[in-house]
Length: 128
Image (cartoon, helix red, strand yellow):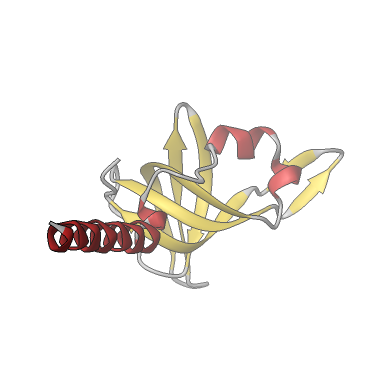
């Protein structure tokens, strides 16, 4: 009887360790730690220079080859923000999660000029 108890305890411990490793490896893919685009747009100075994680739908893709600039607009719940990327641009109307740094070109009299997110990492077509 004691042998069966040890076997079950070992299996439970293995399952628990495996679950924790899987969860920690996939944290960036989970809907935790997301900042709403609306919060960033409504309070740009609070997010200036901070790393954020946002999700939304891609639109308005722009590529400026002469200065090697690529950007797209990310929309969520009626709010929009520009995302600047050095990688490839996602497809229009696709859903993405973006981890990046919120930046303003300038803040004049508490008004943001050129608010955008500089993409550090992107997850295309997340499950949520």
